[in-house]
Image 1: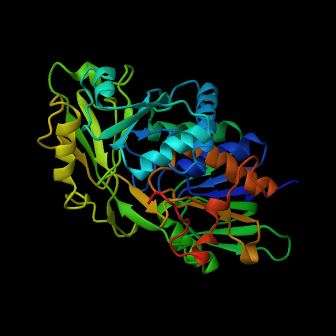
Image 2: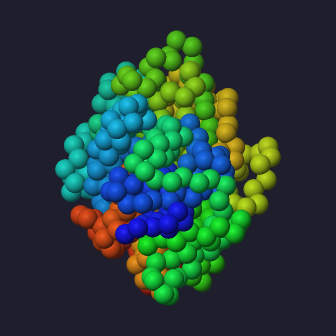
Image 3: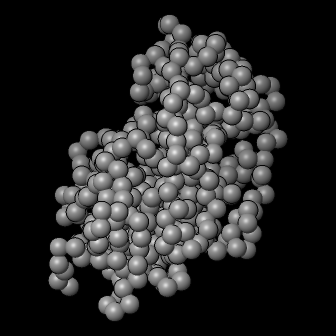
Length: 408
């Protein structure tokens, strides 16, 4: 089909990691693609910036693990096309009290998905890491080779560059205010704040923390996504121990389940510092953030975080307090069940508008496969080799809390 300058096969709204990955996928399939971003490209207002993201295959929900395993391959494929690395390999370690239901679900999920793991008690873990990581007597640890660290801004730039190289058109500072059905020729009109309009045979919406607002404006649908503003903490490794916690050796990415969900990465972005943070944050309006000093951690989480560091790292990491805290770093877009939303908008738009959102602080690692899935849905109306029943919008009509999970 011949198109004019403002007509496209696919219009992708939102150029964070998910939108950029989607635009790369559609452009690579020889579809005329437009990628729109409301701010400058590679901005720091949303969920796709910062210094690092963890990638892991150990999920209590068994439907994520195959997606992670595919994402590893797609990360490497994109890296081979661009010519540089955004993913840095590491092993991964999960730890929790022996009776923790989440850890039991992780072990079961790994077995179902043929992910090799090693379950270790306190003494075995102590020997594994020469005392660098220790757990209480009544805890266990689960180790796997499937871990790693991703550089976020570098990854977003990679997908945008590859999309451009495959013929996509990229436009920033283009805030989308509406999407309208074209009742004459089909497809949709994507309308921007500055008055420009773009026709798309299909449209993919990946606007992160703004998803709820835009979807309500466009279709009147209330999606239960709560933006959270979070902080990331970096802690000083004591002198003489820096090499033992650095990326490239045997130190893993890690997650700890218990009263708090604590996670971290080997030392990479700041020499001599290790990222250890707590999952969570404070509710926010993405259009009314304060951008001032402060720490959007829950008030009662910093002391337990200090205690956790002192107990896990044998005094090799200074637990007195973080030496660097990146506040207002980024936002999570949380759904009640912390599962994604990947679905057609439906209604008058049918299958012409696809929505990807609610990635709930664990989507970045999966962005290559999410981009592939969103492209599949837009171009063929179905996702190849993936059951999307857990990601349907309609699940919240059936149960306001979404998917029921036995381990919670």
